[in-house]
Each structure stands twice: as structure tokens, then as C-alpha cells.
Length: 349
Image (cartoon, rainbow, N blue to C red):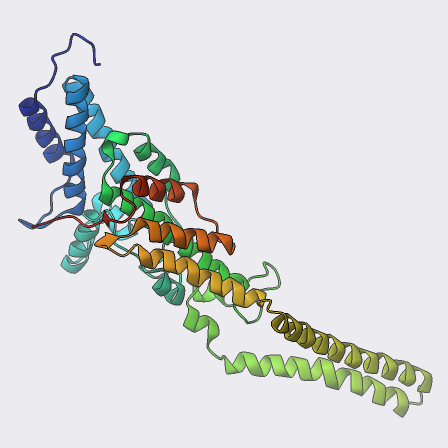
């Protein structure tokens, strides 16, 4: 435990301690000279931990505590979106995999974050490698832990955390659209698109024409809308149940008239909404997704304009988008430093 009597660090001793700590704690790539994003970021954070410890006159224990906290933040963040094959390989649960799979797992272990395209996830569904709608950890808590340590602030880590939260929210909203707004048959129990779960959200599978399903639906409609009622009316008159036949005929005619009236009314309402400039709810819902996707697109590096990102967030929010509070905090902090230039890729020259 740190005490005022502990020996204060020097620049040389702090650098030596940090280098040894990083070498011992952060996994090295198997291939010589291979680049590790995780290692690079930890080296950058180690420099910030050293500077803070030197500023406060701390000892080795306090420096190592800071290094532990910094590593926990990036490791927890990695786990939130890490593919299962990478976490299994890292924990040595699955040693019997081919060389190609080992290389894939090795790359994922050393990559804190690769951009995930929500548009590809929208098309490919929840099995897509770009899907981020579901996370395996408490990302806001992780980011809060990072924000509570101002000395760790790093432009690339700011960007990674913002890109994570934006990607997750755009991807999750895309799945909500397919469940609730995509045209098609609804599940009678849970009310979502009937094909969503079976197709795992794959857009092509959800929208392809299933001729067996079409023929079954037509057969059901034909049987219950024509055969049964008309057959009942005919049978009533044929067997001289005239009063019953008249009654059934009246009910059937009223049902047909009611059905046509509802369809005409729906058409009239849609026409009037367009005439007065109101957007159809379904069009608005998908248009909102486009606006949210624009926020994600504006985060493309290597240089980002944070002011434009925030303006796009505000525009989509005004249309109904809900962004996580940590997203606003991250972008506002970046703007406070430089409202026009945000370099979000490492300089590896």
C-alpha cells in the first residue's frame, strides 16, 4: 500500500517499471514484429500513468495500480464485442483448432476494435461479423471508469469508445426495424416479423418469396372468405332454411362492405397524410435509421470532425433517435479539445 514514506519514482525508474509490467501483462503476438493494437494502446496509456505518478510523486505500487486500472478498462472493453472464438482461444478452452482458425483468433485477441458496419449487419442479420446490437458486458460502466480517470484520456480510445456505442445503437435499432416495421406476416404470440427468429434477422431470407407460404395463405383466404360463407348461404337456401340464408347473406354482405370500407379509409388516410406533408410512420422509422447510420459514417477515420458528428447526432435525436449519455459525453469532451480535428488512427510511421 502506498504511504508518504515510500520512495518516489523517477522518470527512468517509472519507465523501467512500466515496460516490465506491460511486457508481463499484455500478450505478445505469436508472429515476430506483428502489430498489436492492444499492446500499442497499453503502451500509450502506460505513458500517461507514468506522467500522472510522477506528477503526484507516487511510488511503484501506485504506478502499478494505475497500470492495472488502465489494462482492466481496455480488456473489459475488448470482451464486450470480442468474438467467441477469440475468448475461447485466449482462455485455452479450445486447443484443437486448425492453423487458420488460430491465426484468426490471434488477430482478434490483439485487436481492441475494428469498425463494424451497421448496414452490413442490417442486411446479414445477427450472425454477421458486423453485428453489434448485443454486447457481452456493461459498456457504459467501462467508459465511465475511463472517463473518471482524466489522465488516461487518449484520442484514439475516445474514438473507439464512441464508435462502439454508436455502432451498437445503430445496429440494435436496425434489428428493431426488421422485427416491427418490415412488411410481412407477424408472429401471433410475440408480435414480431414471423421470419425474424428463423432467419436470424437476415434481410434476404426475411423478404424472399416463399411460394409454399403464398399458396397456403391464398388457400386459407379462399376457403374462409369464399368457400365457407358462400357455401353456407347456398346450403341454407338449398335446404329451404330461407330465413337463415337471408340472415347469413346479410352478415356476409355487411362483412364485405366493412372490409372494403376499412381498406378505402386506410387509403384515404395515407393519401391525406401525404397531401398535408405528413410522413408515413414506416417511412419515418427507416428514414431515422438512415440518419443514425450517417452518424456512424461520419466517424470514419483517420481524421474525424467531431462537430459534424455531434450535429448529425442532434439532427437524428430531433427525429426520435435515442443516443446513450456516454456518447454525448465523449463527443462533447473531444469538441472541447478541438472542434474540427480529431485524429483517430495511430501514427505507425
